[in-house]
Image 1: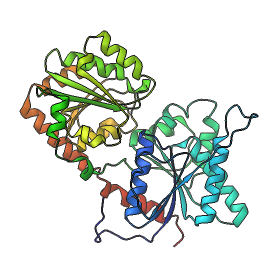
Image 2: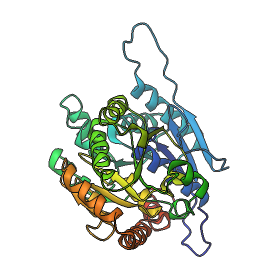
Image 3: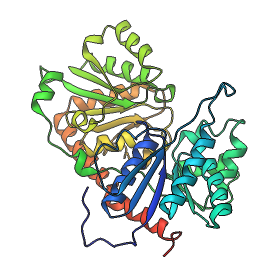
Length: 387
């Protein structure tokens, strides 16, 4: 993404971004945000335990700082939070950061609070901390009584709090005693990256007889309900010739592969593992399935829509904030395999309708383009940065 010189110019900022470096939505969003900020001239410092998966190109404004966690026989569990806080302090002081932006509350917000207090004591500087809530840090992990007091405290101690959807903001208020405003800044997608011409050669390999291509991408955890994906697909191929691409990896992958074999559809299903260039896969996709138990926003769905794939999903969480029923895709209650199957079969059997909805999905994704969302973060940062 390259930025027009006509866009508003903010003072150059030195921003520390703390995130998980994995394929999950929070890590992807944080990495893409940092890359976009660097393209606009800001200095961005990633602080995490390994290089983020999408941090795959050189930019002179991007720095990566590895969090090293020493292991000692005394520790059954290495104290990552302490090591992370120490790394934050080191980067803040030695690179004169203007602020920290931490993604996913656990343990990043609490580590940032610790780092903030240390920096204040060491050099008498108040480093602003912005915490972005992404989903399971609130809806699943954060609800655990083991973590709740620390999560509540560290969120409230943040200088600013953002959530990636209205649904997640509302759930946070319902779940925790949050005393500050939570601002909604939606997830985003680089539409230019995902809006690409399908590779006919690649499509021919996947669907040699011009079958429809169905795709699912996730971390294969129970919350994603990947077994529902396989059951929906099994219903689809009873009516429409199709192939299923399963992108990602995780604890439910083995059971899902077994299910495909049990249902006798394994020859039509490909498990592709983790893929950095998912835009090539989405470009040949007709329907993207996301029957999750919960999605705070649905970044995977938005990326699919930007690639002109129609999303058929559950109606859980924030998905209704991006997917318009009957226009850009379809939604059904969690676990309603029959309804999602019916939507898919009806759509794939009507080529004109499929093309119409693909275009509508793309136009909806454009509303969440990175060029519209990054200025919102810059405006937020500017409220706290030294001018």
